[in-house]
Length: 161
Image (cartoon, rainbow, N blue to C red; front, side, top):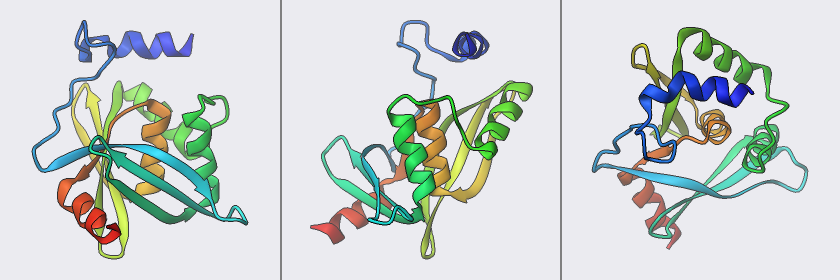
């Protein structure tokens, strides 16, 4: 029931015959990635995930909490019943403001990965400089695109080869 309420609110932002894809263009200097693998270290304290592009290249991310990794894994498996309070806060604020998270974009910020959250609806809003792991968790929860700079992705891919 909750999905149908959410869907009815966003219908006007969806291409009518595009199988529920929200209109969002990806620029030439960006690349869309997906989560290929997710897990934790042996103690379950640190999360590790691998993002993969269509071309098969991979981008590993680590040094985030094992708890967030477990949420991401659960969201990938379709578990939506128990979400962290902060994610629930974002969901409630979005619903009340008629805004919908449509994509996240990961970028390098010195020695850490950060992300911008892109909302669309009554107006367009970009929330800047959030932890990449939380943004990936939200993207997984909502089933929205995970975008990266091509330069950042290619730089990491070169270091791995």
